[in-house]
Length: 97
Figure 1 (cartoon, helix red, strand yellow):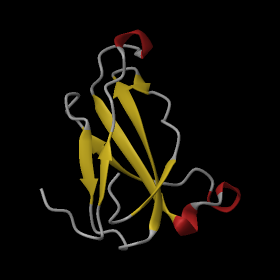
Figure 2 (cartoon, helix red, strand yellow):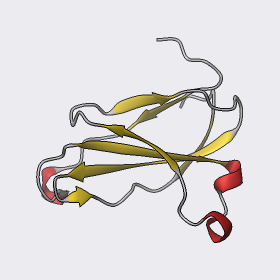
Figure 3 (cartoon, one colour):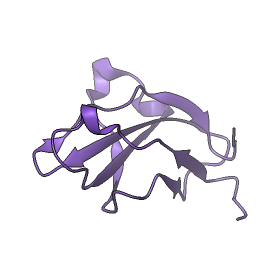
């Protein structure tokens, strides 16, 4: 798979069953750019993408500003609702680690 400088590959692990409140229905990937870092000004605003397959543990965020920094977090959801988000990770578009 070839990636572009304006993309970020996001990978996560399956939530262990003892930490769920029902069957996982999917995941929500949250991301926000540098201008959205300030929680004081922007609150908890973030763009998001919903993955509705509980067996998918990766996705590519596309059409980002190449080289720009983004914060990314992931949350699982069940029929009971969304679980807690992972810690925010800082990555730059076009970097793969």
